[in-house]
Amino acid sequence: MLRCAPCLFTEAEKQSRVNALLERLHAKHNASRPWQETSKVVRQAMEKRGQMNAAGHQLLLTCLETLQKALKGETLGSHLSPSGTECYITSDMFYVEVQLDTAGQLVDVKVAHHGENPASCLELIQHLRDKNFEEFSKHLKGLVNLYKLPGDNKLKTKMYLALQSLELDLTKMMHMFRLATNANTVETILHGSVGLLTARSGGHLVSLQCYVSPYDVFEERTGSQLNFTDTNVPRSLGVSVSVTVEGTSSIYKLPIAPLITGSHPVDNKGTPSFSSVTNSNCVDLPASFFLKMNLPMPFSLSFIQRMGNATGIPVFETPPTLSPLYELIVQNQLQEEGGNPLTTPTHAMRFYASLPDQQHCYFLNGDAPVQDGHSLQGTLVSKIPFRHPAQVPALLDVIRHQAAANTLIGSCVKRTFIKDDTPGLLQFEVCPLTDSSFSVSFQHPVNESLVCVVMEVIDSRQVSCKLYKGLSDALICTDDFITKVVQRCMSIPVTMRAIRRKAETIQADTPALSLIAETVEIMVKKNLPPAGSPGYGMGTGVDPTNPMGLPGVEGWRRVGCLGQEEGGWEG
Image (cartoon, rainbow, N blue to C red):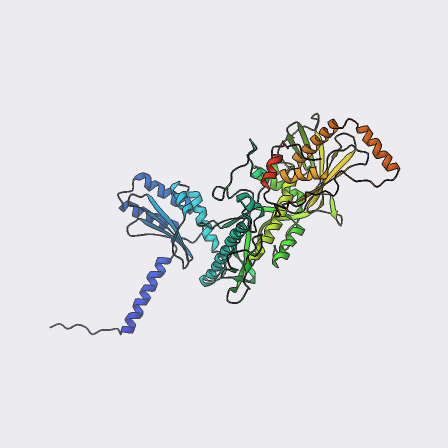
């Protein structure tokens, strides 16, 4: 009679072996596979599924090859469910789940971050339905980049929690601004405390759109205003920043819980109330939050210092290489227009503008000394560090301010070419005075003397203009008129055209110009105090019905973005 062999292992040893086996299985499951193996697994699964036709087979292979090319070097794994209807793209900190039905049709795409339940992502669903694998791969790359952080998974989780908390606070800040001001989409972009916020989706970070020029919100061909809403405004419109967290060489205290208390603003501007920073709602991390520009943007050195002062963190960890600011603005503008900016000889800094009934030539004298004998210097800024949601409005104000100044200077920069001997070609010189002011010099429309307009960009909402001319020069227009035109079109060529047309109107309405000149000459001889340029000291003032300067769009519509300004303002 056979007897069973006695048990060779104790219960503890058995459990230890089971645990070891589970660990090996878990490690094998989580191990990142090379793309060749991923493709092999998918092929095998598709061969077992009779429902998928040859076209679907090739489609999935094309998708995999595209993702492999876009994410070369990234550590991502992929797995198929036993049924073959779920595909998982995984990393240590997140996974993407693609759900198909038994016929191979897309059902859903979900994203799950570490410790979170999977949530459907409409953008990823649409990209796969449109067979837009390039955009799908960009989302995957964005998810990978989100976790390119220092430290282990536990530390990365804390940084992700910090980003989540910041996103919640910024979202609340936008809603509070709108609650207080009832601002529409464009007004929220231009004046909102955090601009227009678009929530994080898939691999796209939270986006804050914070500045648009009149040319961004009007149809170029017809001059009619585009009907933008929160749902149809393009992400690429105007100036925007993305919100993220990145590792730093210094340690900063970042919130890991939302800091805004209550749901109502404390004033009529939508300002929230923040709780104090404590060890219970913040942690020390080798990281900081960043506003990342959608495109690198030229900033003057003093504006960069303003941003560092607002956050207590230098914008650059090491001093950047400086360049003449106007050259940076020119290259940036030419790049936005498309093509290689190097194909246009910017060393001459001469540009041409063709407007209805006028042809202009602009010389940008960016090398003119502004202080201590040096020209205006700046550099391109790609990202701006900060550590508290309350610092975002101040940073956006600086970004808007610089964007407004860049827009005015950039309005002269076109790829248009006009021969210098073209009859009636008008010459203008743009010369920096400070980092936010400049002069535009040109020949008097009536006399042969030289006159100039000084424009100071006070902030993104206000531009102050003053006309300087000889005491005996004929009347051109008022400072108030020029200020209104500039603020409504944000274009130097359109403003110069409006000044000349206004001067022609005044000349036609005032045949006795010689009498005016004679009167002024008598005043000078008698040493009477000159009045300065007409309208000197006049400002647009503050509209008591609109203390925040909202809206700006109506004013833009009146001047028009195609150089067809409306007349009829009081001169």
